[in-house]
Length: 290
Image 1 (cartoon, one colour):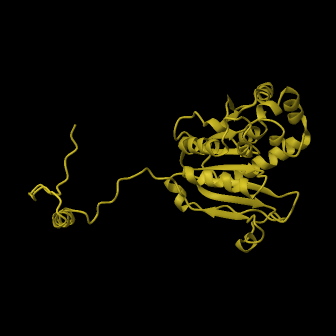
Image 2 (image 1 turned 60 degrees about the vertical axis):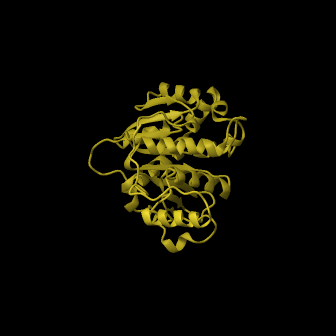
Image 3 (image 1 turned 90 degrees about the horizontal axis):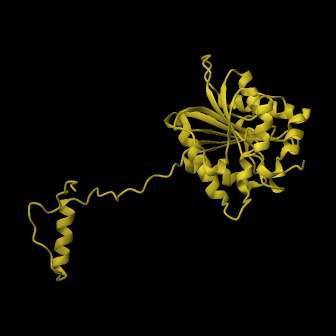
């Protein structure tokens, strides 16, 4: 398997029956998936109330990361585009519910029912245009918008990603911010070329305003200080404000009441234009009637 399978073929084609079985039977991959999933669950910062949460595993594959969720006492739903991967998950009798779907087309899940979401090495696939109809920006928009909608207020989403370059990282992060999320990139082992891992940590809803941002880990397993975050172009913690696009609103008419309208009409009269006479109804807001 190449270092970047997303540049070889679309996921539903690359992960055929042979590759899915090879992926799941690799002890090295199983160990890596378990480690990354544990870290993702840690970054989710779920409340310690002994109440199982309903989590979403996006790009669940054969259920390796879902097993970590089950071991942590959580319920989960797995989504993947590869039928072969999901068939292996069924053979392994994973405890989560499995959905076949393309996350780039949006998540068909009821609003506000998911308590958190994780994804291991999957979101960067959306940056590729595998078909002539694929537009990475639109696919990322559909994904993050639908994810924001199905998450509960204050819930977190943690994505372990392998962006190919800075442009991909910014493309993913900007799409998440425009969908309404707050958060940023958390980098573990930022000074190690082999152990370096990037996590996109997002929060949604009103409770996300006061949510504290997680910090990356260094070589000793300790949290990186803020001073360590400003070297190189990939900073350890990149916090972005919430920039949810607002609906188009009518222009603010503050200061444009009756007096403003009378002045305008007087200006029009001085220019010689025909202007209706002033009455007690001039400048009065009409009622909404059909």
